[in-house]
Image 1 (cartoon, rainbow, N blue to C red):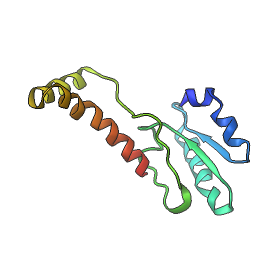
Image 2 (cartoon, one colour; image 1 turned 120 degrees about the vertical axis):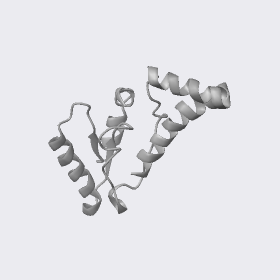
Image 3 (cartoon, rainbow, N blue to C red; image 1 turned 45 degrees about the vertical axis):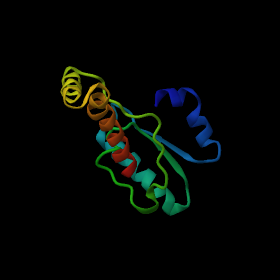
Image 4 (tube, rainbow, N blue to C red; image 1 turned 180 degrees about the horizontal axis):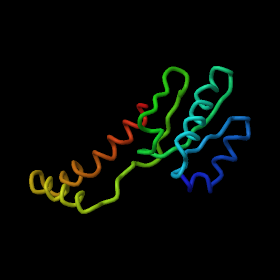
Length: 122
């Protein structure tokens, strides 16, 4: 997300009057709720907005955007988790069951794709 901002995404979005909203890691819940409320209200007043967030962030889970509150979702990159000790153990487990290629697919890639799919469905 930071790379998109650094490449000028926000500047391009606001050129035509589109409102820009961004989720921050340390954002307080009250501030985030207010931001989401404003974002969700835009289509009802004929305005446009873009909400930037990360998969697994507070707005990709637990917040619904029904009807015209969100008309498009763009997923940039697959939200793959950091490979931790437990992830490595899970990969080895599935590799023992299904072979090297399928092991990493089942334990690492498919959960990342599932996470992207769930975030897009919100």
